[in-house]
Length: 323
Image (cartoon, rainbow, N blue to C red; front, side, top):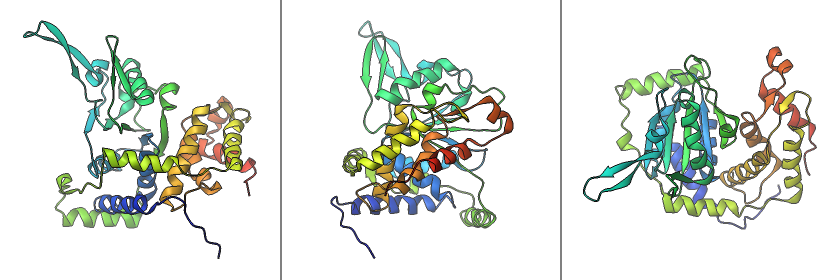
């Protein structure tokens, strides 16, 4: 059996990830892939869009992850009347000084949960652009740098579209992953009922242990960036993304930001799997979640009801796996 020796100490990352997953697992039954992808996004310094019907624990999962990290957490409920100043902050007159002071909004946090993000109008969505990409907010010509880490976890319901706004492509492109949170299996649902019956339907978030702080997250992210990427895997990632721009089933392909997202997410994925180098399996695992919200199918494929995930899989299968 072939073995390899890591050049980077990854023991701390794997142990911390296992502790976080165990702690979240006390309250969330199943959804292992979703939790893994949230951890990958955190290590890759990316934002996540969680999509699923009501009641599949999207909000709870986000809150639990935030609780395992000792950092500033804010939750914003997006509504049709939500204004940009409600999330980034506003200038307030100070009677004592005679000047206007900037009162910071809830975006000034380390982890921001935006619930039902597609219920706010485009003007408010646009207020997120600068924060998500540049980690800063500009108000009245003054730029305010956001504290590190800064991570947006957004939720949306794919079914109930009345009173919702389609997220702009430019905003979707700023999410590292779009994760579809599915229904639990029959056995998992039985376990959910037993667990909540035993706890008398009480979810005590105050009891959640914290395993990381802002400084430690910064150190883990620095380790992830040291993960080795062979030239043939750089080519593999580039070919996958390039193929999305010429595939006959795709109207709009992925941008270079998608290539960078696949590479960074693959690095984080490799560290969680105990390797200091990425493999084709890492790339294939994260590519679906990186690409599914970044490409638009042709009208013909949309009318046929072809799932975007099937088209992405065809793209991946078309590219020769590097050896």
